[in-house]
Image (cartoon, rainbow, N blue to C red; front, side, top):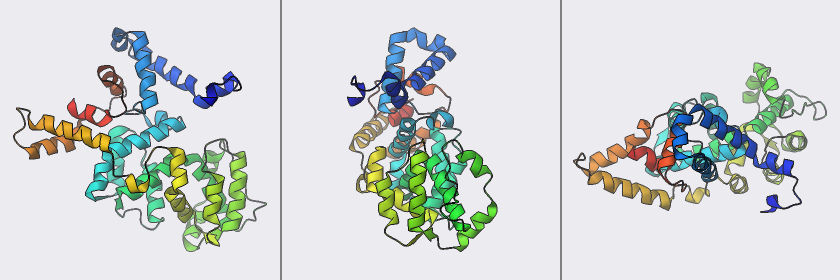
Length: 332
């Protein structure tokens, strides 16, 4: 409620909440599909749209540029992915990079392979990205990589400079607007050197990371958390640093998309919805056995249409209560 107080300037509130971004997207969607949406009425359409944004259902089947456009979108996508596929973790299955990317593409058809590969490097410490990964290890590393992607790219550039022997005074601390250009120009020699060395001085990296946080405009993990991690060892590698960040409970709570690691496979609300769905399929005339019901449930997400705006149509037909993203696609 503090953001709504008179002490917060209107322009700052609009910038922080990114209301204009969502309003622009809502109008764009309406204009592109006005014949479909206007039959429900404009008031109901906008109410449903912003309700879905609030409940984090709005990222389903949207393009990757939309997902990464705001921190709320990124956190929403992380949570949706966890809720849809945490059963993989409960079953104990280990999946490859390509298999995790296939799951992500069920929710976002153009989800890039590079993000999944970067996540795998965090989990596997850049040793062998073709190894299999547990869902629990993957989801927390994926959360860090997606939510703080631009900041992590900036840290990587600093790390490569330090590996190359540059002093902290000559290391170029990138800004959020220069990260992509610098990454495209990074030399392959630094990557080879990175694999051959044990890491860099933790105190030196901490000093450079502090400077990066001061100049960086995008979101970044708490400086206190990063200092805490870097103070635990004399030397640190880039991926061991990221692995420690992904496991830090304070950072997980700040993002707010996932529960604690002890509860990551527990979701009573979704379990209840799944039980209802299995019961409905079991009594259906077209279902011959409980085995076929479970099989249908497993295949349901793959039948979900990847078309850009299918989630809007579903949202008009059901209440946006934050717990229907998986069951909706299963029942249609």
